[in-house]
Image (spheres, rainbow, N blue to C red):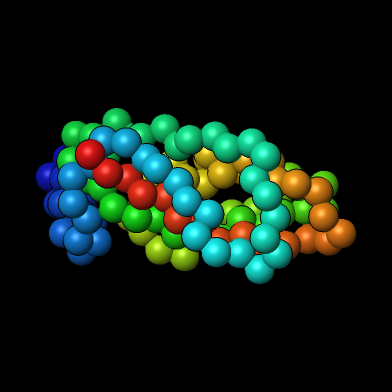
Length: 111
């Protein structure tokens, strides 16, 4: 139990994130400019609430021609928050396009 607690504390201090309570998303930049049609907000993890963990998660969403997110590639952020972000973004739906694209998304977990 102490090892788990120490690991969690290390993650918090190493990631240098401030307190958090909500998640806000922003499609920060993308290669194709595909319009977001359906957005699912991430569920803020209970353990992150207990740890008062917040910050920014950056991921790249691989989007199929039909607009469905087929893969989420983490770029940065706390592993606890990245998991919540991946779970939500896989449910997003973008406008259909001629081919596969990569959309960069930032999720901000703030109080």
